[in-house]
Amino acid sequence: MPRTQPNIVITGTPGVGKTSHCELLAANTVLKHLSINQVVKDRGCHDGWDAEFKSWIVDEEKLLDSLETEVPNGGYIIDWHACDLFPESWIDLVVVLRTDSTKLYDRLKARNYPEKKLQENLDSEIMEVLLEEAREGFDADVVVELRSDEVGDLQSNVERIEAWIEAWKKDNSGKED
Ligand code: DAT
Image 1 (spheres, protein in one colour):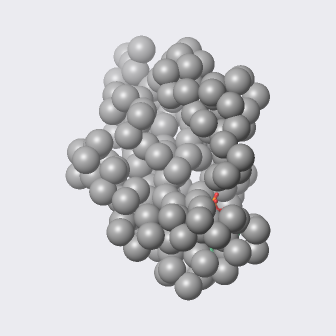
Image 2 (cartoon, rainbow, N blue to C red):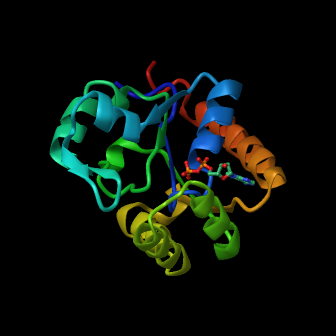
Image 3 (cartoon, protein in one colour):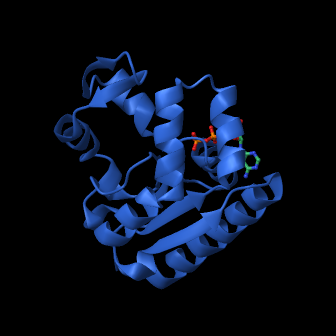
């Protein structure tokens, strides 16, 4: 059945502002914020806890199995620092958030990230790892790169995504008739 609401992935290096964007979008639209971190934890889609990196070791197969009955129906804002695991057919828009590295450093430092994890994430942001992953996994017209340096960026990005959702709904209305 065709989706009547789109699925949007909000991705980027930890600390770029994914959760902030997803929460504001979920408050302003009917789309639901799907925190993959929470799903991994709550539904046990992992092979344990990595003590050095202080993060779950994600079992991607279990994760996809647990999402496949809900996500393809549409209406989700998916909050995750990766996007290439999601089947292309599930996703209508991939937003890659980007942040200036000094700002990212301060945000991750404030989170008390272990030094190694902090450096790896900074390197990943500088090398555009997540942007590259999105571009390799999805068509160019599905991927959009947005700055998330200032609070004003958060507001304008969310407005832009809301406008995109409306346009998507117009383009896709009537397809189920
Ligand atoms: P993520 O979910 O990508 O890890 P977050 O939404 O938790 O990021 O944000 C990390 C911190 O940075 C948090 O204190 C809010 C702040 N932040 C996020 N986006 C911002 C922006 N565009 N301008 C200023 N601060 C921002």
